[in-house]
Image: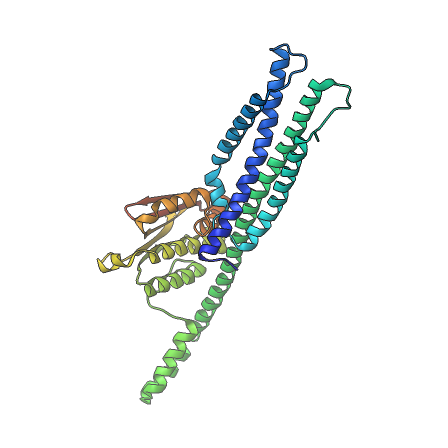
Length: 382
């Protein structure tokens, strides 16, 4: 279940505000303790003050400097935080925000108690100077550990979400792969019985039973899910997948060009090949589908070009597709930050590339998105 429109935007912003406030508060407490401790040591050693204390103006200055440093540090993470909070479900926001609210409450109560003298202290025999140092170190360690824990929690939640999305896509692809296998088996059985079917149709033709002959042909087509210009790549799973994507492209009036040859000595797993082709082509179909309608009216038909084959001792897959030029910066940002709804497919492609010690490269130029994947033909996994 997902929020939509203003409600989703409001929940996302509220959750992000809670996280930012918590991070700033913890960082502020940490830097305040750090600068206070350094200031006391400086007064004690360089200023030769036996029991140094801060004046009211010095305390205000320390607080402002600490807050400014904390705010700058958190602002430096704004892009990463924005990516983390991009388009999650309401359950994700709730699970993330509630512990942060508890942490924020604890911090507030601790600071309130500290303002009334509830501090970390020694056993009482070290003197006021060392009591202050001990207290600031205690608050610094506590706030530093809390800051680390919040960072791990926030970014860990994002990582878990991405892994779940990747696993979900893998399950969907496995189901599609199984369906493609079944379709191929049906077509294979039909080709095996082709001689008998030809004899049956010839009998209907000789009897001039045109209606029955038409029904017979339709049943054959439905049974085998045949189509014109079926791909022949040398791999039955890839053939079926490309056939399915080509039909989708034709339905959306997307020009389709395909030249794929899977080498016989290619040891890349069929499922991994389908992950590569499936995710890349799904992204291409979605990009073409988002093109503005006026471009179609100007004769600028969206296109997808697929090329793959052996290049020396490697398998090279290259897909080019038209895309909306306005999405250029969004696409580049998604590849770097894995924005929700944009980068999950490429995460799965990247997993396969790393598994086979391969290389992936993407380019965007003049409204054309170009992705190339190079894998060793031996198919050795890491």
